[in-house]
Image (cartoon, rainbow, N blue to C red):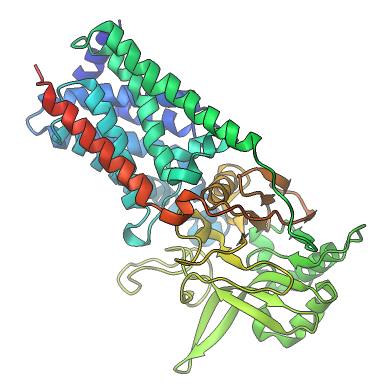
Length: 522
C-alpha cells in the first residue's frame, strides 16, 4: 500500500507534481505557531521524500529536485508568512498595491532554501536506501536554514524547530543545540516513516527505523526536557519589580499628529496605575510615543511622572543624531531617570530591510514600509546595558530577537534579555504569535529570562526555561507587574552557539553519505 503511494508520488509530473508539492508545503506550515498541528509534518515530509524519488529518473535530477523543493517551500512560506501583507495594509493608499507582489515575492525568495536542500538531496549519492535520503534531507534542510539566517543580513523566521513552541519539554533541547538543532531532529523524525515504502529493505528493519527515528526519538526529546523542567526552580532577582505597559495603540493611529498627546497620556496613566507593590522599573514598548524623547526636553519632563522614585523608565523611542551636519534617525531604547535625564541609550543595530531601510536605495524603485523621509541608521552592534537596580541586560529591539546565537555580545553574559517591539504592524493573528514564540526560544537557548514589551501584544515575562510567568495577550490594554527571574548557569548553546547544530547537520550528512555509498541503488 505505502509502496504504491510512493510510486505514484514519484511518477507525478507537470502540474500534478507542482500542485502536490505546493499542498504538502502548505500543510507543513500548519505545524508552526499559531496552529501547532505538528503531526501534519509527517505526511508533508514523507510526501516530499517520495516526490523526490521521481527526480532520480529525470535527465537532470538536481534540477527536478530544485523545482520540487521550490514549490514545497513556496506553499510552506505562503502560509507561514502570510502576515507580511498586514504592514502594507496599514496605509493602503500608499502601499496596498504591493500586497499581490510582496507575499508571493517573499514566499518565492524563502522557497529558494528548501529548493537548494532538495536539489542537494537528489544530487548527492543517497539513492541506495530511503534511510540515507531521510537523514540527508534532515541535514541539508538544517544547513539551508542556517544559510537563510545569515545571508543578506538573515531572515531566520519560522525555522522548523519552532513547531515545538507549544511543547515546553521538547523545547528544552534548544539549550543544547539551539532551534537549528531541533530543526535537524524534527525533519528526521517527520521524514523517517518514508522508509516504510522502501521494499529494498526488510519490513522488520523498516519498522525498527521508524520506531527509533520517530517514536523513540520524540519520546527521548520529550522525556529529557520534562526531566529538566521537573528539576527546575527559578528564583527572582531581589528588590526588582517590573511594570510592563501595553497601551494597545493601532498602527494607523500611532503617528497621527492629532493623537500625539492622547498616546502619551495613555502610557502615563497606565504607568501610574496604583498597586500594592510599587514598581521599581517601568517599561514601555518600541517607539512607544510619537516623540523623539532623547531630543525633546519638554516631552521628557512630562514623562517624568511615570518614572518610579529612584527607579527608571525604559522605553523605545526614535531619536535623531547628526554626523557631518547630516541628520540621522535611529530606532533606540532609552533609559530615563526620575530627573528626566537620559541615563542610557541603545540604538537598534540589526534593521529590517524594506521596513527601516531600503537595500540598494537609488537602484530599487521602492520605498520602505515605515513612513518617513529617510532610512534609519543602524547602531554599532550588540552590547550590554547597566541600568541602576537591575542586572546587566541585553537589549533587543523587535526583529533583533529572532537571531539565534546572536542576542548577546560575544564573550559577555547578561542577567536577562529585554525585547521591545511594536507588533501592531503585523495584525492580530499569526505574525505576533510567531514573533513571541521565536523570542521565547531565545530564553531556552541562552538560559536567560526574556522580558518582552509590545505595543499591542504579546507582552510577557518568560523564565530561562522558556515558560511564561505572566503575559498580556494580543489586543489587550493594561499593565503587567512582575518580578524578574534569575538567569541559569551558561547553557551549552550559549557557550558554543550555532557551532553545535551546524556540526550535528554536517555529521548527519556524512553518515547519510556513508549509508548511500554502502548500498548501491538498483
